[in-house]
Structures are given as C-alpha cells and as structure tokens.
Image (cartoon, rainbow, N blue to C red; front, side):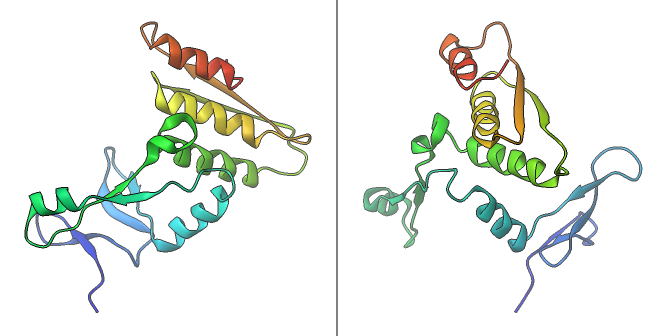
Length: 161
C-alpha cells in the first residue's frame, strides 16, 4: 500500500508517516519542522488517559444528506472537554511530557504562555493537575488586558499567575 506523503512544489517528499522529520524549512537556514506519526499520537493518548475526558463523536443524517455523494460527517464534541475546548488535550500532553522528562530531584517546573482564552485555561488546568507532592508545576499566563473577564477568572481559578 502507498505511504501517505506530502510533496513540495517540485514533487519532492517533504513529510511522510514513515519519517520522523520533515524536510520543509520553517524559516531560517537549517531549521526543520517536525512531523508526527501514529506512534506519537498513541503515546500522547497514553499520557493523557485519565486526565482528559473521553468526548463523544456525533453524526447527523440531515447534514450527511445535505452534503450528498454518500458523505458522512463526524463531529467531535470538544465543548464537553475540561475547560470547554480541545486545547486541554494538547496542553495536558505537553505538561505531562515535560514532567516525565525531569530528573527525580527536580521539585518544580515553570510553564509560560500567552493566550486570551482557551489555551490559557487549558495550560493553567494542566499545570494544576500535573502538580503533586513531589513536583510543583507553576503556570504563568500572559493575557491581553481586554481578554474576557470570565476567561481571566478561570485562569486564576486554576491557580495560574
């Protein structure tokens, strides 16, 4: 079977599920964009199991008919996820990966981001949930002054500065 690949304008392969690195430049000389494969996704799923909610996938026969050509649409209901968005999955995976990479004598980690809402809440909660008796994960979130007050309150409520 064919291996899914991404090609550049010249037809050269720049990313394949069988490679660990893309050959596509992301800016400066020598910088590379990383590709992920199925194994990476499976490892991430293991890291966040029991932390994130298992949200439903829904379908709609009415919308399927509107699309025609025997197409089926699937809707992942991430509004039911902790913090109300899919961002919590990525933030949890990142924080759990960071915690796992630390030596046993590390007692605290600092994570920082800039966001006006969903990612801010996600990282704040992920840090709070990753904290334990032996490892404190502190989150600092930089938010615009005009970020919704409810989002600012949620970030503070999750213990972030």
